[in-house]
Length: 373
Image 1 (tube, rainbow, N blue to C red):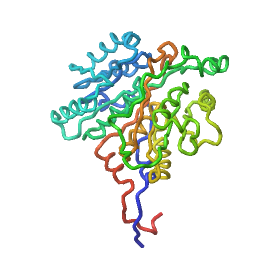
Image 2 (image 1 turned 90 degrees about the vertical axis):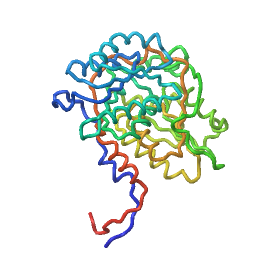
Image 3 (image 1 turned 180 degrees about the horizontal axis):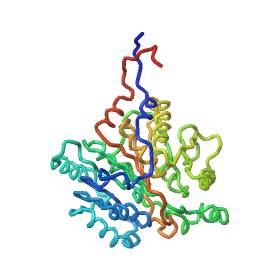
Image 4 (image 1 turned 180 degrees about the vertical axis):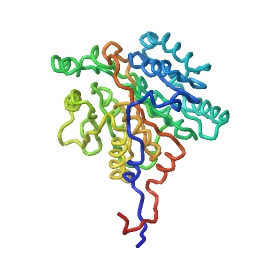
């Protein structure tokens, strides 16, 4: 017997690629791209993927180097080696400022140029290295790339040590949570809605804020205050928290630490979501959206992990009515961010046209066999 059913996100999650280790021994298919994109950051892992690709003989027709306006002196420490790697990888290098209002337009123009110049039958492949990319950089990059007919591979180098370590945190919790001179970021320079994900909040509905918090509570509080200051005192069910669950057992303590620093009461709506499985982020955000979109204007503050930002980018493709709000720090604390790097991971999205077709099917009505397993 046939019946009409609505396609749900959970049906396509198993089709989306998993996060797997990047194997440099897989063969020549790994060694050539149309475009390679990476970010100039101050963390040591900013160089790990470009070094690895250079050493295995990888080539790209064109490289794009994303750059920040903050911490320029700190970032410059990696500049010489980064530029050397990229010049070895490709003959053409394009710098692109992440905060540039025309960032997405410029990125799309570069990608479209690669598509027009493609002479092989398959869609050209782009490799995006998010190892040193902020959530803003990831979301802006994915906005442009998800609209292009390309193949996409995402690489991510995991830091060896994240600060604060458990010993640093437990020995001086008060300073890590409140002292502006200590921690991963200092202050809040501005809170602004994303130009790429402005949402559509025209209806007079109450606001609902979904927060991915950090070890500095001031950034999440600044977002809440920017949206509706009354929610600081009376959040009710309108402020939701997404707490990251690290994939390494030694880092699991960070989830409870995040809860304590941000003073999240047990009564507050909250979800523990993997910092590593981007599909988990997508699944939980979809659940929240389906429960609330008819009653609230939804805003998300993306201060979580890089792979959570990847999941968020796919969610935003599904739901253009959701607004993204950024809280930029005055500066990042380069000396206390992360140290070293370990494994390099891969998410091979392959055909973006196919990915879009999967995402576009969510929520659509389809005829299904009621007797099928």
